[in-house]
Image (cartoon, rainbow over all chains, first blue to last red; front, top):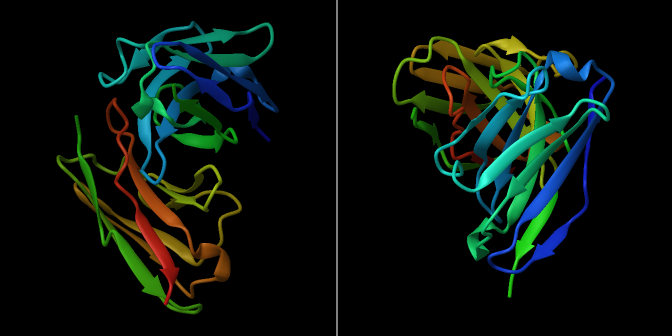
Length: 120
Length: 107
């Protein structure tokens, strides 16, 4: 059974960067992708992008494309999401999710979420 | 981008009620439609894929239907753990957009 465990909550100042990790287990990392989804307080879900754990190819939502970078480390079965130039409206819970068919949007297992707070 | 809408945005119901939530896509997405349940403070949980395929372990009181642009999630005999927010998501093309959610609360 796939498990995704994310890094802990972060507090950042405007203009800073944050890097969230997502350690996976229970499945063959390279056979699926990882999508990242964010949820602002009291709001809905917003898909940020996806990365293939097989070859590292990534696709980003235009809403985040200029500020986000997705990476993977196949030696530790871990995915990372870095968001730069943080603003107060980036305050949100960030989720990683296994994209079962690798860029299919089929998000069948999720991490517990990481709260990122941006405040001066 | 494909836009997803849901109705209603919220509804009040009682344990044992039958609940129906509608999701509409801005263009045809065939059956590339997923449904998630999100309990407060928790990550979303995948209930249904391909518009009507129940995920393993999901109770049979959940069902999905539809194709093209119009889809429905039905919960027969609502249980206490079903008071949550439900999201549809299209997996037809990137970006994989979500609906705004439907909150189901106690009447």
